[in-house]
Amino acid sequence: MKVRPLVAFAVPMLFLCTPLLASATTSFEISGWLPYWRAASSTADAIAHINELTEVDPFVYSVQNDGTISDLGPMDQSPWTDLVAAARAAHVRVIPTVMWSNASAEEAILSNTTKRVALEVAIVSLVKANNWDGIDIDFEGKPADLKDDFSTFLKGLYQRMGNKFVTCDIEARTPLEELYYGTTVPDSAGEYANDYVQINKYCDRVHLMTYDQQNADMLLNAQAASSSQLYAPVADPQWVSNVVQLAVQTINPSKISIGVPTYGYEYDVTAYANNQYTYDIMWTFNPGYATQIEQQYNVQPIRNAADELYLTYTPNATSTMPVSSNINNALIAAAAASQYATTYNSHLDFRLLDWPDGTSVKDKADLAKDLGLRGIAIFKIDGGEDPSMWTAIAGLAKPLSTTPSASSAPMPTQNTTVTSSASLTRNLDVGSTGADVKTLQQILNSDPATQIASSGPGSPGQETTMFGSLTKLAVEKFQLKYGITTASNPAYGYVGPATRAKLNSILAGM
Image (tube, rainbow, N blue to C red; front, side, top):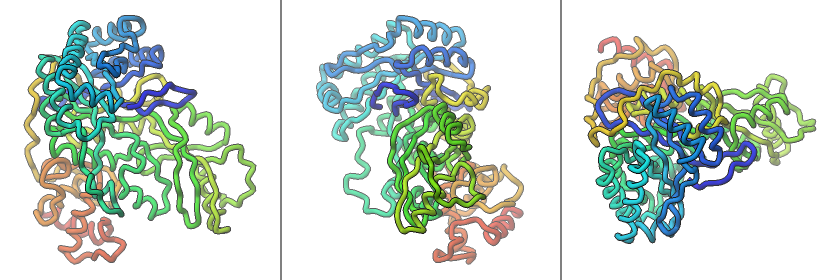
């Protein structure tokens, strides 16, 4: 996470922390990351809602180029001391983040045994001197060849920390077939600085940085483009699900929290003929900025397929471009630009705002539950998030303990019994969510020939409510097996009336 000063409504693209207990219970935890550069509003926001949290994660510590640790709070002064007191009183864990993003310094320190051990000792001393409940390691930008040295560092830190939490913030890995969809996968693909096997061993909690999606999933981008949709989410639940399904092949889901963003992006979008778009990121913003745009340009946001809000506008618009009167207000600028580009075989620019609200955060919490994870890590809590978030997540956090339990938990047992909806009554496609999607997955998993996955989310006993790419592949197998359609048909992988009829006939006999 690169640290940048907050200007106006812009927020840096940093991560939040959420430690989760690695036990076989079903407790759900919510943590929040608090930026040091908004100390007053961050701490006030967290204190006001402390009972909705399991943990607070002050983002205050930074490793310097010489391996020493800088306290950017400082944590021994108000308002941070006020936050700590409130957290202690509410039995909420306090686990500060230590951040590092200088690749050359990381390599110089972590590859040197003496300096690496000194850093381990310094972090442990910091935690124990302040009686923090643990530490959150957010070392980003590491080169791939530092993988073994970083793993050695985690092992040493884990051994020295005793009964304190070691939390690791790690990259969101998109399955390679989706990351490079439509292109050739490079030979270097799959080389990472974080060793998931070792992270599973030496991290009590793992925070997946599932935000800033952008072009991380080219398959989802292509699907949106093929249907002429505007598509620039901060974090599409389908992408998050894809990331999780890959991660849980190596990391125990009872350790994993998904990072949940509370900020949005503004894009300068160019529309070309026939609803084709290119996106240029301008900046990040807090939802209050979107409210200003709504009022200034008299537009209302709508919810998109990624469970986020969005709207379009043309800055200082005095355009006389023809726009159909039945177009939703939120899409007037996009529709006008596209119509102009198509009519004149040219191109035209407009602005797109995309951001999550309280509903988006709640949807991510529900997704984390469906995927059998320990919780969510809200990125960020600083008073700038959509206020409805707190109502949306009220009562979800169920804390367990201030010390980590065993470092690995038993995986869920498999069960193919259908426990969701009684029948399938609507058409389903990629992006669909709900109990009927879980029923669909359970029917598909009842036959080895159409099974969604052999392990992890989507596998027998771990069905989810999210229709993703793996579900689509299983539907295609189902359609081919029963002669419903073929790969050349647009309905291939889509649960329409004919496919539903066959699925329901199987369901009736289960």
